[in-house]
Length: 347
Ligand code: ADP
Ligand code: MG
Image 1 (cartoon, rainbow, N blue to C red):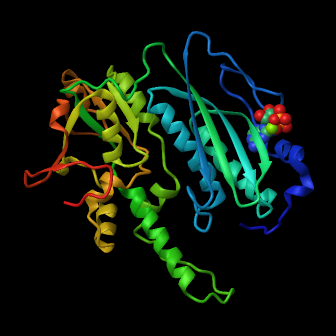
Image 2: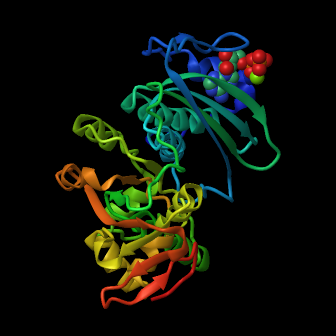
Image 3: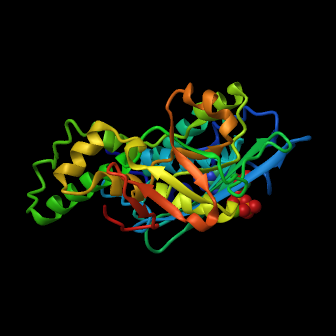
């Protein structure tokens, strides 16, 4: 930061703070009839179906402010919720933001947090329509609710995959997890070395930028939802990858009543992820399957959509659903079948 000015929240008070943070918000969507400023916001979705998703995040449990800047935090918490709306095949439209703050936080910290939130909202055309502000004795708690819309009958659930459907995944997996490993490693170095207070701690992350970006600034795959629509593909099931491919596959299979087979060699992994896994002496496929926070989309389509899917940009076919009694399997490069577990398996 260029200026080190610190304004205590108490100087503005609760109402002053809310006003300060929300005064310049503008609503862009027709469905937003009224945003911040009354006892409740007013929305009008006409004939559309409404999607609602909410997340609660606690400092020290879900995020670590020793290496996450407030602006990135704001961006990420918004994106994580927006991603859930896309995972239903919807369009995000509004967001509410509730925060509990301790005295440690200044007005400037919150300005940064809101700058990140607003950046994500602007990118996805989401209106910030309200929230709640309260105090906390220890650290920061954030609760975000995102609302979105969907044409009637077009929402994609986790539960409707067919037994022979193709399994598709977007982007690449494991990078955000490796980014987290890098940050945690540097934090441990920082904590174990003596700080004289004069030399800034500047770890060298060169060549690892992509991994840090995937951890600190994830993106939600609006482009994929648009591509699917354009290609006339309606997935039979879909979920966003927040907990790891393995865990999300289990949700789809359990709720759809299927088994699955995925192929190790088809799991998309970025070069930097592979290099970092080697450096950490970890199996890169374990990271890709169990790492999480990728915010990519995992979905299934009927066999008849095969030709459309293989033409799609940044979508990879990784396997197929099976009869439920066959279970969930990863087929390794050598043809070995390994049962998929939510966590901690090794090849
Ligand atoms: P109430 O007493 O009804 O809870 P508040 O004074 O908390 O009302 O909120 C006043 C207005 O400010 C409401 O529109 C609310 O949604 C909005 N608001 C409060 N906190 C936040 C926040 N952190 N971010 C965005 N809007 C907020
Ligand atoms: Mg309130």
